Every structure is written in C-alpha cells, then in structure tokens.
Image (cartoon, rainbow over all chains, first blue to last red; front, side):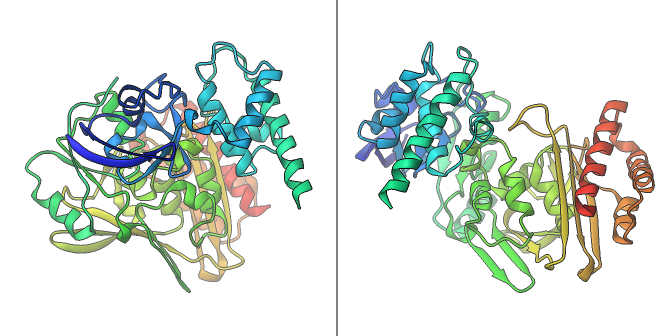
Length: 161
Length: 277
C-alpha cells in the first residue's frame, strides 16, 4: 500500500492504495465516482477520460499512485461548469447519446476541444473525437451538438469583449 | 484486464532514480507517461517488479534553447511539443508530428523520452529525431554518454540502452531558416500507429539532407541514396522514385512484402514532394 494525497473535484483526498490500482478503479471503487466508465482498459476506447492537472487523461492508463499531489476532475465535478452546461443542453437537443456509456468522456473531451479552440469545424471535431469510441450514435449527432456548443460559446466570448 | 501487482517508488531527484535503477533487486522499469507501459501491464504483456516514477523529475522536464539547438528533457510530453510550450528547433516539424501522435488524452501523458526508450518501430519520435540528426543523453550509475538517435534503436523494441541507463534528454540541432521538411504518416485510422512513416529534412545552409522511413520492421531506416539525391537538389520524380526503390530494396533484412514496400515508397515520395513544393 502506498499513501497518496490528491484533490478530486476540488476536495482534498487521502488514501492508501495498492500501486497496481488504476486511477479509474480508484475513482469508481474507492471514491464511488461511477460517472467515469471503463470500456477497454487499455487506452483505446476513451470512455474513462478524466482531467488530471487540467488535461484530459485516460484514467485506465494512469495509476492512482502516480496521482499523488495531483488534481483530478471527473464528470461529477463539472456541475457548475458553463461549458459543460452548454454541452449538456446541445447533447440533449441533438440526441447526441443513446446508451450514454461514452457520454461522460465525450463531454470532457468536447469541453477540452472547445477550450483549446479545436472545435471550429466538423472535420476538426471529428479529428479531436477520434480517441473516443461511441457504438450507438454513428457520431453525427455528437459532432452537431459539439459544433453548436462551440459556436454559442464562441459568440458569448466575442460579446464579452 | 487489470495490471499485475507491482511495487512503486517516486524518487525526488534524477540521482536518486539512477541509484534505485542500479540497485533494484527485482525487475525494475522506469515509468514516465506510462501510455505504453500501462497498456502492456493491463494486457499482462509486461509485469515488472518495481515501477520507478520519473514523470515529474525536474531534471527531465526542462527545455534549454541555444543558438545551435534545443535540449528537450526526456519527460516533456507530446502535448507540450504540440502546443509549442517548449522551444522548437525544427521549424514546426515536431509540433506537427506531435499533433498526429495517438490522441490528445494520450499526448498529455506520453513523453518523448518514453517513446525513444520503448522504440516501437511504428512510433513517431524515433524516426523523426533520426531525421533531425538528434542525439540523446543517457545517464547511469557509471556516468553519462550520448548517442545519435540513428544509433539508439537497434531493432523492434530494441535499443542500445543499458539496463541501468536513463534517457535524460534529446538534443535537436537548430534548423536554418531556409530548411524544409516533409512528413507523411500512413495509418488506416486517425490516432493509430503508422503503417508507414516518412520524414525528410533538408537544410542547404548546413549541407544537411536526410530521409528516414519508420514503421519499417525495425529501427528507423535512413534512405541513403534518396537523402543524397535530395541534398544535391534532385527534383526529377522518376529519379527520386528510383532512389527510394533502391534504398528500400537494399534493406533486405526488413523483409518488406510487396504491400509494405509500396506503402513505404508512397510515403517517401509524398514526403519528398512536400520538401520540393
């Protein structure tokens, strides 16, 4: 067991973990944050994407021990986030999910694309989403929802200046 | 699947990491971004006894920029290079390459040193840094040494790294203002490893020109005849195709089948055309 201290969704957390425990399993099984989903467990499907120190990360390809002194944000931590709020609405309007298994990671990835200004066209969005697999929707509605959210947020930013 | 049981230690300095690696009584592996190692551990293809976490060692995170080149710490991430957060000696080549490497959520963790150490034939950095004539600095309990990136990889997942050595940094020479580069990655799906890679760098001011094929069933493959022809200013497409063909055929130890040979030839000619355009 190794002692770790980190921040999860802005709250300080301390725990003892076996080094083999992935960040994903730590979040789900120790912290009960089950919005982080596991598909492939080897970095291909993207369903387990969370933010580590502000950057999107595969939580199946990161050990909980290596998150000592880091900050982790999961989908549960975005309740008050304005970009996620817009995405949640456009995902709803455009029917951008069916089973919902990939959705938390789709939202986190889409938020990162929008904030890095990498959601300017359908082609760019599709490129940015290539690491997140959805087996229901065929992606079309997801891309539409992200494009609309990016446009709205871009307009708001322009009006604010 | 889940990773097998393993011990873990996070040294606070490079000297401590070197010491741990030299004195480990079990099979110790360095972990930086872990984007290949953890996938291999989850698939139970790797089961090291001890992980030595070097991802946040300050000695491995710096980028030192001078007139002749840039020294990039081994634990600089692909995303930092993609975003231009570290100095770029390559006129944009390295940033472009980083943006084609796996997916963003991999690039935020994976490191340039990790990629060189693993030496996956289809990975981008071994091929690109060979084309840029970069060299790596290695350190161990016995001291340090440097190696050209063209010499570091010896085969598929094989390098000249000793068991107790750590890649400290990669030194990339500064390209002149009128240097040109070409980069082609052929892969069936975005974010996949390449089926064929080709990187061309020409820098007339430094009398330098090199074309390297990657994902070439072994270490990065320098196409010697083609490099020379491009350096001499050769522009004739048939002559260039001929040189590429000779270079690929000479590499008989790579056992290219017809499809692979064709892919590498196409990647190479497209990359050369980017330089000539």
